[in-house]
Length: 87
Image (cartoon, rainbow, N blue to C red; front, side, top):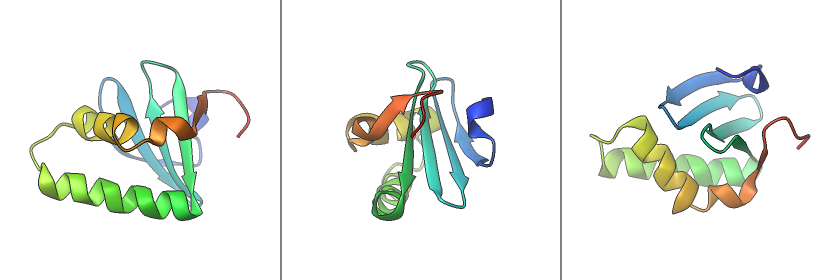
Protein backbone atom coordinates (compact mmCIF):
# COMPACT_ATOMS: atom_id res chain seq x y z
CA UNK A 1 0.00 0.00 0.00
CA UNK A 2 1.28 3.42 -0.93
CA UNK A 3 1.72 6.12 1.72
CA UNK A 4 -1.03 8.17 0.02
CA UNK A 5 -3.44 5.48 1.25
CA UNK A 6 -2.84 6.11 4.95
CA UNK A 7 -6.20 6.21 6.70
CA UNK A 8 -7.65 3.75 4.18
CA UNK A 9 -8.08 -0.01 4.52
CA UNK A 10 -7.01 -2.04 1.49
CA UNK A 11 -9.96 -3.99 0.10
CA UNK A 12 -8.58 -5.37 -3.14
CA UNK A 13 -5.29 -5.11 -5.01
CA UNK A 14 -3.81 -6.28 -8.28
CA UNK A 15 -0.64 -5.48 -10.17
CA UNK A 16 -2.14 -2.33 -11.77
CA UNK A 17 -5.06 -1.27 -9.56
CA UNK A 18 -5.93 -1.05 -5.86
CA UNK A 19 -9.14 -0.30 -4.00
CA UNK A 20 -9.20 1.03 -0.45
CA UNK A 21 -11.96 2.23 1.86
CA UNK A 22 -11.91 4.92 4.52
CA UNK A 23 -14.41 6.82 6.62
CA UNK A 24 -15.07 9.28 3.83
CA UNK A 25 -15.53 6.74 1.00
CA UNK A 26 -13.32 4.83 -1.42
CA UNK A 27 -9.98 5.39 -3.11
CA UNK A 28 -9.46 3.73 -6.49
CA UNK A 29 -5.83 3.75 -7.58
CA UNK A 30 -4.37 3.15 -11.00
CA UNK A 31 -0.85 2.27 -9.91
CA UNK A 32 0.44 1.97 -13.48
CA UNK A 33 -0.50 5.60 -14.24
CA UNK A 34 0.18 7.04 -10.77
CA UNK A 35 -3.42 8.29 -10.52
CA UNK A 36 -6.12 7.92 -7.87
CA UNK A 37 -9.80 8.78 -7.58
CA UNK A 38 -11.21 9.68 -4.17
CA UNK A 39 -14.88 8.78 -4.21
CA UNK A 40 -17.10 10.41 -1.61
CA UNK A 41 -20.82 10.95 -1.01
CA UNK A 42 -22.91 10.27 -4.16
CA UNK A 43 -19.82 9.15 -6.10
CA UNK A 44 -19.02 6.59 -3.38
CA UNK A 45 -22.60 5.30 -3.39
CA UNK A 46 -22.61 4.93 -7.18
CA UNK A 47 -19.19 3.27 -7.09
CA UNK A 48 -20.34 0.75 -4.46
CA UNK A 49 -23.37 -0.18 -6.58
CA UNK A 50 -21.23 -0.51 -9.73
CA UNK A 51 -18.60 -2.53 -7.88
CA UNK A 52 -21.17 -4.91 -6.39
CA UNK A 53 -22.82 -5.41 -9.78
CA UNK A 54 -19.53 -6.33 -11.47
CA UNK A 55 -18.58 -8.70 -8.64
CA UNK A 56 -21.93 -10.50 -8.98
CA UNK A 57 -21.88 -10.54 -12.79
CA UNK A 58 -18.23 -11.64 -13.09
CA UNK A 59 -17.27 -13.51 -9.90
CA UNK A 60 -14.17 -15.08 -11.46
CA UNK A 61 -12.55 -11.81 -12.48
CA UNK A 62 -9.26 -10.80 -10.86
CA UNK A 63 -8.98 -7.55 -8.88
CA UNK A 64 -7.26 -5.89 -11.84
CA UNK A 65 -10.07 -6.91 -14.20
CA UNK A 66 -12.80 -5.62 -11.88
CA UNK A 67 -11.04 -2.36 -11.04
CA UNK A 68 -9.93 -1.71 -14.65
CA UNK A 69 -13.55 -2.12 -15.75
CA UNK A 70 -14.65 0.47 -13.20
CA UNK A 71 -11.76 2.80 -14.03
CA UNK A 72 -12.31 2.71 -17.80
CA UNK A 73 -15.93 1.80 -18.48
CA UNK A 74 -17.36 3.07 -15.21
CA UNK A 75 -15.90 6.50 -15.84
CA UNK A 76 -14.09 6.81 -12.51
CA UNK A 77 -10.88 7.80 -14.28
CA UNK A 78 -12.55 11.19 -14.88
CA UNK A 79 -12.50 11.80 -11.13
CA UNK A 80 -8.81 10.94 -10.79
CA UNK A 81 -5.90 13.14 -9.91
CA UNK A 82 -2.20 12.53 -9.90
CA UNK A 83 -1.07 10.81 -6.70
CA UNK A 84 0.41 13.32 -4.31
CA UNK A 85 -1.82 16.16 -5.56
CA UNK A 86 -4.17 17.71 -3.04
CA UNK A 87 -7.80 16.72 -3.66
